[in-house]
Length: 236
Picture 1 (cartoon, rainbow, N blue to C red):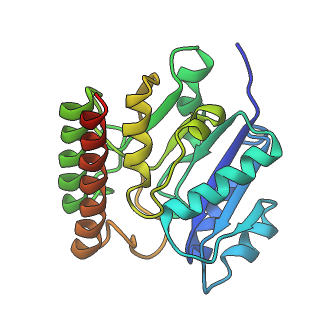
Picture 2 (cartoon, rainbow, N blue to C red):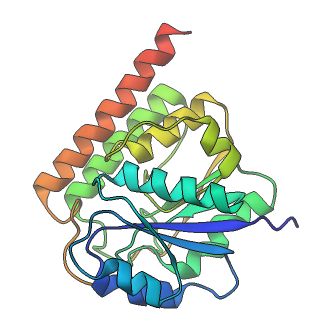
């Protein structure tokens, strides 16, 4: 079994209440680096991360994709070979980190996505509106790109060299979908694994917690899915 240098990247916006628990739950010695990207927080997110021993990267311009890209670049500069993205609200269970790395270490995946729509997920952790949007985008990706996914969740692991080659450009909610469709076009081996998705530790999700937030995210994801499909047909 090959052991790669792993960096965990956690984009966070006003997650001081959830972040301490999440960082405390990370398995010891699993990753060489834990990077928290403070995405313009107005609370003590950065201070909590620093006290917990994480590396803090600051990205004042808000945007999920922008924060992920900042963390990814930091991971690359440190020498990481694999980057794992986790949400900062505690909904992604750190106990699933070995599961996320399993297909890579077994040599059968370049890109692993944690599926929230499995029996392992806590009941009600994914609101109905989020499930609907997720189902729609997953179906579109299957139809247009031939990748049979059930989820487009943000808990994912990918080889740094391959992610760099994708030249990511979506700076908001389109980032997760852009990664999947570009990886599919590049014929990366994409594997989906079930995870123990949880209710967030504190407060309400900024995206899935409201119908408006879910609709906005779904719009960006569908737009991104169709935009790259159009590009694929043009260059076919």
